[in-house]
Image (cartoon, rainbow, N blue to C red):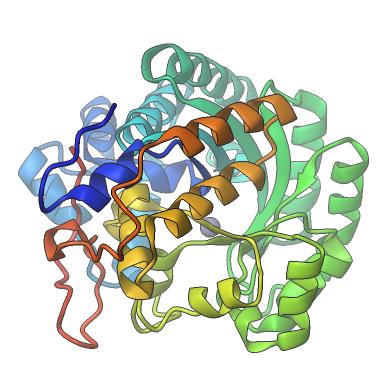
Length: 375
Ligand SMILES: [Zn+2]
């Protein structure tokens, strides 16, 4: 039974809740330890191989710098060992957050474009997945996604790779990258084929563009979950549709603040989504690069919205019910969630030290202190 210490009851509770992470990008999940491994293996990449220097390089400054960090990590992924390192590092981080299952977005087209043989990518994923379960008790599944900015050729290649290789654990098909100028509908044939082959549809939509993109994801791509979906909050009919059809949204609050889509966690439309009955899940997107952790996302939203423990447990349960786990696996995790003793039903605002490093300055409450690794 978890013990609760004064000052940190809510953090202990959130940690103890078995959670599913449904929106995390494999490359963006690389933490300091993982990148140190990669930097030492690939000194030619010029990424700092000294911990303090690397921590400084990783510190979130602005979106352009985030992209530099992201592509620096991508440039060090050369083969099977690098992919396995990445996967096991992610599993270790997830285990520290009390996450038990994750659907991880992999972008095969980018790796193939960088010259990695497909077999190396698949072996790294498969070996990493086995180690994640054996060493960290975290079950991983894969979402292969199209980098939308690379166009229809990326869509076709991603689909062919997914259907030809179909590695164990591949459950879904996605679409990421910029939304403005990259219409969802053009990718419809690929999503139709992926769905006919039994993969679930989980495109990004409504992160950096309006509700029309979410509608398109639903109508054109048959979205069963929406990556982000934040802008749906601006469209009452869309909110009703998502709620009525129980199409969950993968909300990534810290990411949305970091990328400038919302000014602060307090201003995040997650409250509006919840109030309209939309199934909300909390996720991290690119956690170390945004200074986010899964536990931190729950705490930040709980603090901003004044959630009661039962409501926080509901968010954890949403992450399980919205996943593509089997019915048996879902039932087992839901029973575990229900069995975690709550710290009382009063509103427990987290201490300042419990909040993630969100770059909000709206009320000067949260400082931009950059990357923080939960211990
Ligand atoms: Zn994403």
